[in-house]
Image (cartoon, rainbow, N blue to C red; front, side, top):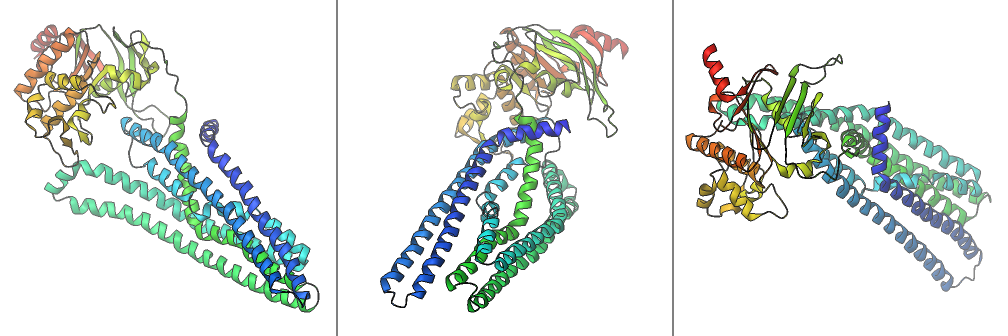
Length: 569
């Protein structure tokens, strides 16, 4: 409960402009309906006097017509400014949350969590809802008691009728929510599952085609899609029934008030002007309820979107305790008693052990090879060293400062990292190597390309560094992608370089270039960490850390490690 309260507090703080806009809408709606009610009441008095004066000239009717035109114009101005508030609120909402949503979505992928839910879609959904008539219907519905009070003044039976009809329509909307809510919630969950399955399927589409799996995979995806569409359709169809009932109720209620008003006029209990006003005072306040009924499915979808956004963005919106005055890193990195576990089990117990009590220190210019079999924990340790993951126990320090104290934007330029499966972003080669810097150092881009031995390949391209990369089309081979990702890691002369299985896609020429690269960046004082399965390929590395099942089984000079391995063989 405390966590939920904190999450809601963070969300409310971010949504303060929304609350301000809502209060503005309340005030504007109050002004609008005050104009309508006052003009109808005053107009009924004028109409009665005109009808009683048999000698009334055409000018009197002209004045009455002018009064109507003036009231309508004034009401139109108020409505315009209210819509303008909501339009700008929608623009602010998208501007404020789109960027943080995209960043949080990328962070979900960094944390290696299932990526299926895209908060940007919910931001767009909420933005679009703010510009619909349903968004303002609630603020108009708040003033129904005022219309009931005015009708009670005209005749108690008409006021009671409007109150009863408003209650009936409110119950219809409530029943609509109860009958469609479950279907829409299930549909939203199925939609997320469908998108998650689609995202996970895309990288393996080549293997699926080769082995005749596409039909089976498509069928499985289609099952999720059918669940989402069926749930939405059921919700819409049920909602349409209640919407139609609401519309018919409004029409019947207005007609009944008009007929009963004629009866009251004939009996002398009301004037003709009051009868006309009574019809309008019944028709107008039921309009917002009708808009709510027709837009209720979208309103519920928006509420679900808000709940998902609140849960997803609350951790991102909370301020992080980073230190802002840290100098650029220049000295050692120390790893002290690192433990890392997998995802917590449903029982609350810790997940499987990934790393156990990993400890080592590296000075500027030193290079460490992390060696071990598949699933030994090498990749997890590499991710921890660059701050992509936090250890469950222990600490990583850079210049005697815990890595968690560094703001990623401040530490990132001093870190070169190449993951085990490197990939490039849509953009030019130059943009990818320069890490999409808004003000890239062109000389540094060229130096990084030269350092990794990819400059000759880039120069053979017609557009050179301006060549566009389309990851979806596979513009470059795995080896070329690998070396461009390596150049990206070298951009800006980083002080800490972590390479995860860098030899995987390199030929002998590429491996020789990598050996020279390690030597050059060590000479300028950078710390180098390379993860690999076989210590024999670690050219240019002087220290080796061997791990199995997440534990250190041997460490020391590479020559000694190789000698011990040879003896044990």
